Length: 202
Image (cartoon, rainbow, N blue to C red; front, side, top):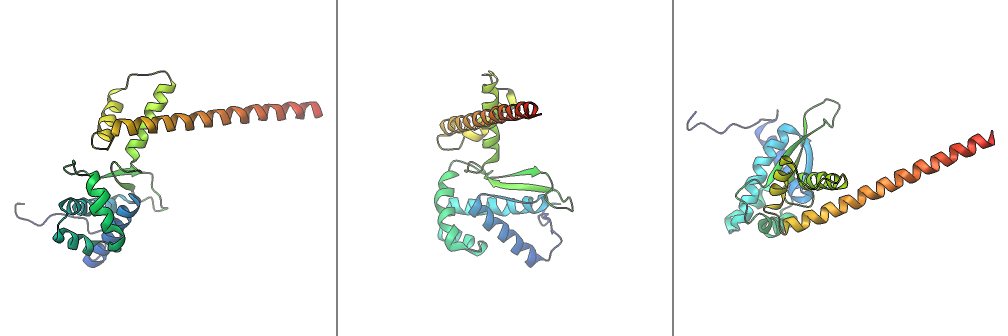
């Protein structure tokens, strides 16, 4: 309906409790860059987080006062919001956060999700893309499929030194996979030797 109030999730809370919850979630998100919560809470916190980062990009006195009123620990997080995060998202026109569905974390089976800042050290899509490419290269596949190629463009487009950083992450994933494979082979060899000694003892 034109002119109507914007729809939002009440989250089964009063207005003041809802605002306190969202402030707490966004404070944790900016601090840790990734949080796990329920799907509805993640979607509502995402809206507030996007507004916060937009304030950071404006970098005005009014924007600082508005951000300060949202954070629970403004003195710790304002320098990050108006410093590294403003620089990270300088070229982006929105889409600073991402919500990913995950398996329910609680016994009540409530739908869970990860809310994260994109292009950061905990960017899950970046890590998944690097892992997929490392697995393909291990199998001798050099040509990326359409989905992986799309993800490469997404995770490197705005990230500083995106392609180079992705290649470093792929190398890291390849080394870790190699170590796991060697350890597994070593454990299997030791297990075989133990069984052989057991038979001889009998």
